Length: 491
Image (cartoon, rainbow, N blue to C red; front, side, top):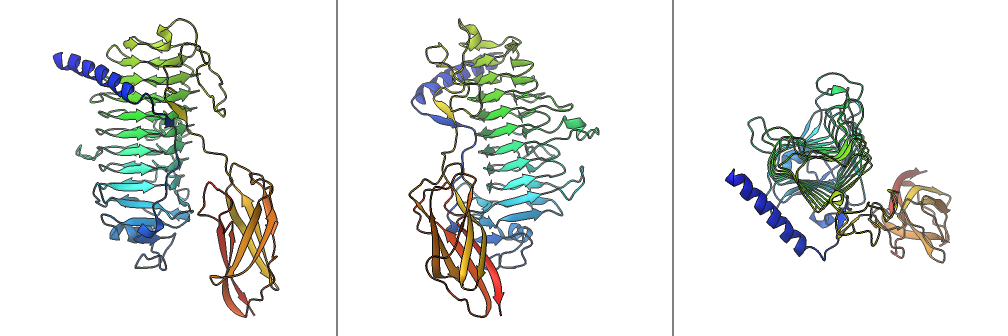
């Protein structure tokens, strides 16, 4: 009993100190874009169905070869395209804290792991079984069971998009002997539409085992700046874990079939304890926004719960609940150690906006007496800047004339008065150019021909390349995806 009281006291004291020291800092809620590793640091290169044996940029290998070769300090760049797994991909490498083994998209490209060729129940997934392994930026979809399964320790899953998998999109557990599953971090990742609805066996339970992110067992794991939505069970579930931290994340629209439909679960059965849930937003979930779910000594601090169908919060007498905002028909189930929450103040919370697309989403109204509590204290939902992103979607050549279609796949327009230029290259050598004047609206395309004089390509096999914004005159959200190449053979 003395230990329990000391733990509570330490938690309350450390919490007040923490909030005092970060009061001036504004942090982001939800995923932020990851910064690509410098291409010069690449040591191994992979492409779908690669046949090289050296895993070099010129002769990329398949992913299995790279896993066998990778050692501490290696950066494995995955060329864009779809990777179909015929067996489990186990990343069992051992790095160090200062020299991790990194698996990451080649800059400007996207590696997609797709398990759609396998029937539900087939045990195919990506496993992170090693130590100090970083998995960054990839997409994982349609896996017949979980998407990515972390049971090693000291690993990082960063900027991953896991969706439409049969079980949980991202899951952390220990090994069968209880080791592993410690000090892993899941951050800047999105896990959505993972569902087992319609399959009634014990594995899928009609959607009851498909969370966005599940920390099923393990100790000292962290979930930071993540987005989980439209998963059939819960958004984030910390089940039988110990000392898990869940912070600056968003959980919405979870729950389907026989899934529970909570936004964030702060624990479960023994040995679940000491989960900290800090600066998160949960809204429009089928059940509760936040629940300790029988976890012991859970702390909910500076969270915002809105429009969750059963209740905003659910907790037990030992749950610490402080500085949270709840707006719902049912504010709370249970009684905990409650301090300075919205339901303990006079008046009703009014939000500036309940439109999830608004910059003011779930911000308490100014002078409404609630601005100093909830998730958005010294924090804001991350929203990418409205910037263009130019790509070449098609390139062609005929009788000395080059033509390219440039698409603006970004969120912002190219303004008027700016030239959208294309440089045309043959076998790596610049030959001519084309261009048009802006504007070019987000989502729109424009055809750009040859204005710098025709160039007749000699007979033989050649590689032509179109490179838009090659002078970097247009600020873009991604500066590394501006070119497209094509091989053609001329008589």
